[in-house]
Length: 391
Image 1 (cartoon, rainbow, N blue to C red):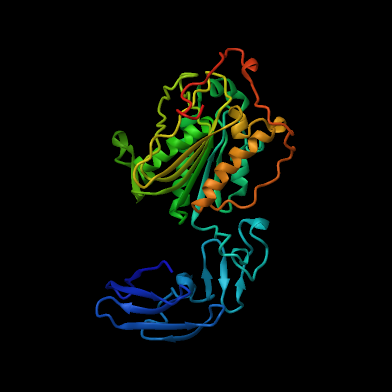
Image 2 (cartoon, helix red, strand yellow; image 1 turned 90 degrees about the vertical axis):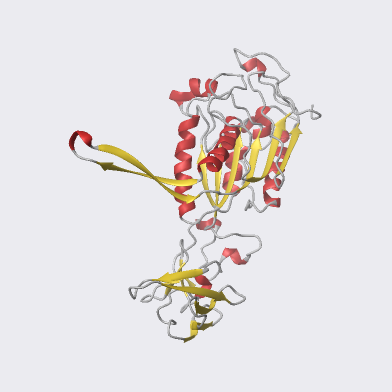
């Protein structure tokens, strides 16, 4: 189900119809909202083919099986990403997520509706750590690949050679990444993907927190531009179409949040709001116990409001042990924080599937990395703001 009513203006005057469903979510009856009379009733075979259609509105109504739109000429049922033929009892095209969804044309959700979720209806926004790209196999990229719905991956600030110095030191490029990701969010949300999940590592975790604030304060607004006036009076005008003023964020998963946007090694984060807003329902934060660089100040989670489920846990290891940033030198310390965020998300409905296998095996030791000596302008710890009672 999901369709509540429809307004038909084809006759010149508007008429509202209410939809009633059977136990499988198919439209069983259509009711005229003016006088309460049943204007259409339907019955279906097991594959969705209409075997009974009675009533004055039965032919005109285009929403029947699964409340999806059915084309009057082709009789195909449109699901957004795939078209279904009730006549043949199968999909016309293959799963849009490729082999991850399977190539079988006769099944849906991998024949497991409890463990798999349709592509339409959810999206992940993944912000990676400083200098990290999609093929660096951080925990953000691993969870991105495990996510069974749409995902938007955002590489870390300083991930290109020409921005590595300023991006790595000051977080240059963070605002541009946020604006670009917001535009993608609006497009995806407009198409029906309303379950929002966000993950981030390092400065990417800080961007994830700011992105949640952008969504809360701006809502989902589609901006368009046009020109008004003529000659010297001609000017560009921006229009905002509000799609949703109160979007909800289901889950925010963070790996060792380090901001330092604008002033290196400082908690003054220019333009970055670190407190998670009220529209975040669930959040989990994995924190490094053995990070000794003062230039990597931690920002713990803010206290949750009533109805919010926030949790935070300190793990052995340095900053990149927690976020999986040591690539081929990563050891076993990376596994617990990865599973912590993975399980925290799964427990609240985030559709994480099977975790992909890294191209490099984990080093078989549990010695925390210490990169203090690799940073030319660094000072020893302890780092700032480790949560009280978690040292």
